[in-house]
Length: 171
Ligand SMILES: [Zn+2]
Image (cartoon, rainbow, N blue to C red; front, side):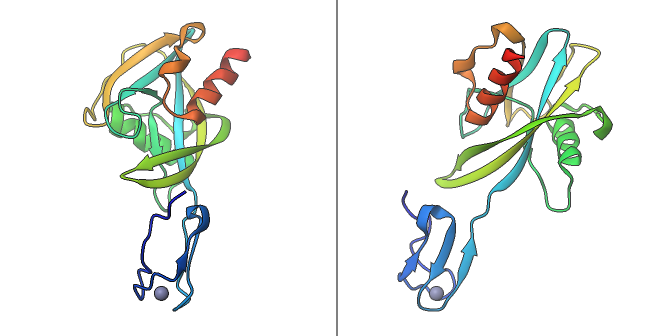
């Protein structure tokens, strides 16, 4: 994997190492930077036998199926982040106690050539109605419900989402 930094951001030396883009070290000035994993959340909305997917309208994986959610902000709990993202993307008010923890799964998120590694935290949320709306069209092209047994696995972008959906199908 090619290093995402060509120079030390502190002293501009090229005498640097950044194996696997995990721990950056400058051999001249000692500057150290950890490119730690980022935490993200995703919500599996259920209505009867169906699961709700978003169609991504931005890279990475533009046009592919995804779940509502996003990165956790500093100072936020995972549940708070999930509620905030759902509000931002779909205008829907949900409460942290409506979220049931499913599992976590690692993911890769390549954004503008920077390879972020994430830990995706998955929650489930039961809805009482099928009606949903997009309020962030720059991020989401469409919202689509699929019966669990008819979800097109090959249209799901992220490996973490693909894995969790496959696990739900096997239950
Ligand atoms: Zn340096």
